[in-house]
Image 1 (cartoon, helix red, strand yellow):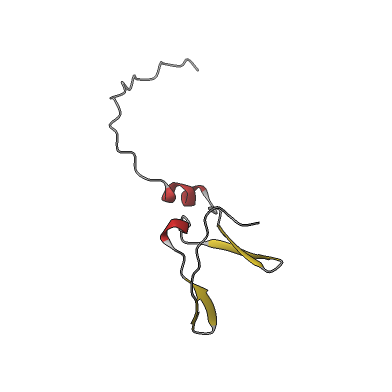
Image 2: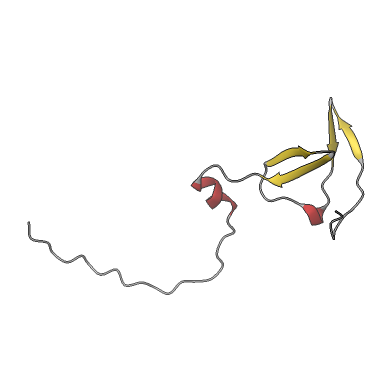
Length: 79
């Protein structure tokens, strides 16, 4: 089952660990990933954000200006 995009990469040692550099076209978002073994394949997937703050931290800033919104005072409430 060959993927459309594949690339041969070097496997190297980093201390006691084996490592591989991920080419730019295969970059994963964020700074964490999940690795699992499926038979003889090694599958690396982006890790899901752990919190709403994690999701918000990954969002890119919005570059458009929003129109001003009239902030009307609340209506009085009888208690």
